[in-house]
Image (tube, rainbow, N blue to C red):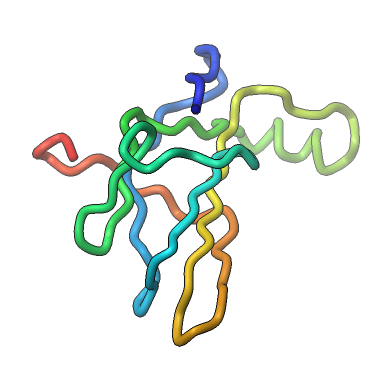
Length: 109
C-alpha cells in the first residue's frame, strides 16, 4: 500500500525499524504519513519491533534552514515520513505519534 517517496538531496533514509511500546498488544495498526500500512506487505512484527520492507525517509534540516522556517521566510517541502502506531494496552487503545525510527541493525533488519 505504501509508495516510496522521490529521492531528494534534503532527505535521508533513516532506517526500517521502530520499537513497540512496552505492553503493546494486538491489534496493531501502522500509518506512514496518515496512510495505513499492510502487515506482511509493508511491514512485519519481529518480537518488540516493527520492521518495514523499505527504509523510511526524514528531512535533513540545517540550522539556517530551520531558522528561516521558524521565522516564516519559507517552508520545507522535502520528503519526510512520520509513523503513527495504534495498539491496545491493558484493554485501552493508545497511539504513538511520530514514532522514533531506529537505524537498521548490522544484520540488515
